Image (cartoon, rainbow, N blue to C red; front, side, top):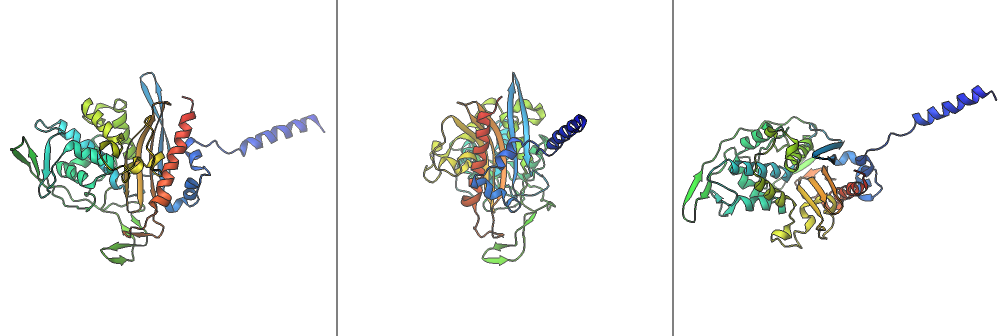
Length: 378
């Protein structure tokens, strides 16, 4: 055979083999391609689960922190119900307001008018992160008001966000309740209620979900409308977390105005597991509010691993936003993800696949990325 023809065939074969090679997957794609059934079962029918994920690699060079973000289906215009993840920015803004109020601090005792429970701001924030307490969150909403929450986040470049209602009872009362503040053991003062702007209906993809919902004891054969509910998409959650963990990576106007002591208090509250603050370990095991890596086990989290996070779970939607560190192995990364597990398409029936599908998926996703980070060359 002519030497030129042979050379041409060799070169052509080489070019052809290069052209059909699959592009190299990024670490998030590799994790989602796992054959582990906890991930594969979701990814084989991913459309029904409405998964959105952002994973951030963190590299340190001298005094610099470098973020590399990887996304899967992240879209701020595709709605998911954020549930209790909104408690994170509310806690942040409550601390910031305390720092700007001369007569208040986080140990100030107070109660909400009409509520018999006395508490402190520190206790409320601890309860929010340890066990995702709705009442604790709602007391801080009464302290701040919805307008101040939304404006405070907007001013720091955390968007799009819309906090429209309290949690648990889902009260959307536009006027906050007065707070009774203890100046000392016998003297009180009143922080008057605040009138807030009525929320506008959201017009987003997926704002109406499912095929039916229960209202009281009646099944309504229509999609469930989330248009007047809270909005807190993946990008906004991730940006808030970055500002808390790495404030110096942001301009001063984008940071929360916390003292270093207040920030340390917040970070401690974020990673502390329920048993460390007095909750029953059988009911509130370490993974109760730590979905990534440990949500599907009742084993204690090893002391070298800390997860600074806030979860949410309601209406079949599970979300976690976390900064995960392993001080022993020099691992650190950020991960925010949401998944909808509502196979029958009916909302408010308390029939969701949290334990069967959602939490195992998030736990294994965390483990897959932790395993990658453990071996990643930095």
